[in-house]
Amino acid sequence: MNAMTRVLLTALLCTAAVACSKKVKEVPPASTPTAPVTQTAPATTPGAYGPQDLDTDACLRQRVVYFDFDKDAIKPEFQAAMACHAKYLRDRPSARITLEGNTDERGSREYNMGLGERRGNAVSSALQANGGNAGQLNVVSYGEERPTCTESNEDCWAKNRRVEIVYTAK
Image (cartoon, rainbow, N blue to C red; front, side):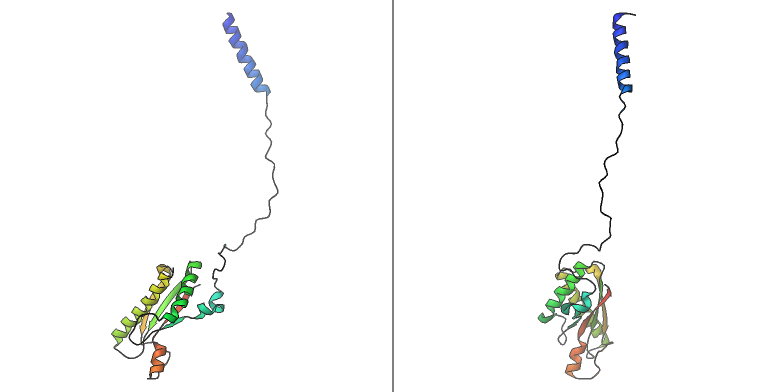
């Protein structure tokens, strides 16, 4: 064998011997003790509404919006309630509301069904303007079919011109 081949062969054998002789012992990573995993309720922002607030919060307990005769505009005194219910909807994405529009007995059945729907839509728009999601809202008109008062006087008619906010999912 020539000298060059011997040198290459020796180098190859040395490399193989070194590679085989160095056995690296794998050491598992040191485990650090971890705290036991506990499941907690979903994180909520401070001041976020929960289902229990529907019965305890004065603003959320206000679930009837009253209207003037032949009007479908929300009165200013109900704006705070719209903001509270909209915040509840933002805090609880699984919540669902049905807005039940009602009218007094005056007017034709068709007119009152349309007016009840316009009133329900007005409340829906107010909730959406305050940050509520349209997908959480459903509008139903009962017209004059579900009166809360059956006398024929202005006080009674005023009680029947309303939209009731009904939570179908909390």
